[in-house]
Amino acid sequence: MKLSYSSAGVDIWKEDNVIKALSEQLTFRRRGFGSPLEIKFHYAGFIDLGTFALAITSDGVGTKILIAEALNKWDTIGIDCIAMNVNDLVAVGAEPLAFVDYLAMEKPNEEVARDIGKGLNKGAEMANISIVGGETATLPDMIKGVDLAGTCVGVVKKGEIITGEKIREGDVVVGVRSSGIHSNGLTLARKAMERAGLSFKDPLPYDKNRTIGEELLTPTRIYVDLLPIIREFDVHGLVHITGGGFRKLMRVTGYGYKIYAPLEPHPIFKFIQEIGEIEDEEMYRTFNMGMGFAIILSEDDAKEVEKRVDGRIIGVVEGEGIEINGIKPFEKGS
Image (cartoon, rainbow, N blue to C red; front, side):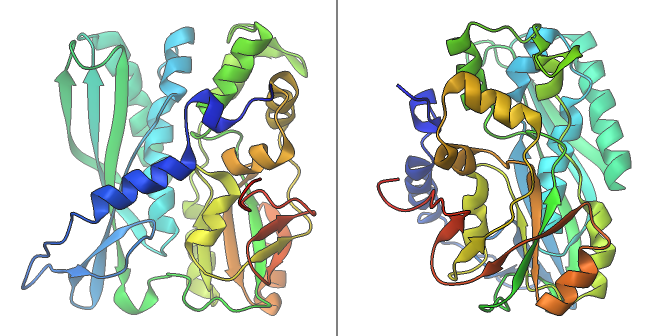
């Protein structure tokens, strides 16, 4: 049987139902100064501060932590934690400012905490943010090992929030390269390795100087370098490609996409696909496949932007749904 994210234990369709069940109960809104802006189902929440909006995100590292544990290498997952939050702020046009972390451990371990702190500090430096606080907890009856998550805040002028409402058919998609698998889809990657009888300490078939685990631990790219481009050009939509893969493109518009020139996936994706016997559709439903971020704007602006980013024009806003070189990963029954 071919592997899928669902058979590995993560069903993105059921996750939608969980989000819906939770969010339907969150009806109370603060009144007065600091009330929320009603921009729903986006990468960040917003607090009205007059001319400006405070943007807030929250995310964790996920099962990438299990790879860090297997290699006893903890000094990079803090970068992932920062990146997953900061990139969601960039995806609404906000300038990231500050971060708080949450570290839960089965039992206290100063050495692990120290190395996680190194990664958090490095990620903060890369993103130009301050870590202003956090929380640690020892929870032996609740978790096994370690869990790491955080919350980030940023600021954006209310009139400059990028929601995707300006997207129109004929707009062009510029794909920006990822650094690798980032911090999503690791459950499927681990199941593929398990099926193939491989260890995280085994060498990569395409790079004998690195182990599989080291490749999977490559930190998530932080996309704050896109902020000047966002300020300079009339950007219609921004997409951070995380869990659910290319389906994230649908988060910013009801229009469809024709992706006719996707970025070349990193070798790690081809490796996972081969050892797991995973269908092309499932790969694009699960992984970033070499594209960690997308910028949607007019064709004229896109031609200028692609000169300044690590990526290129990959497709166009057109029709309904998502088609990637003839593949339609998100149609019912696929």
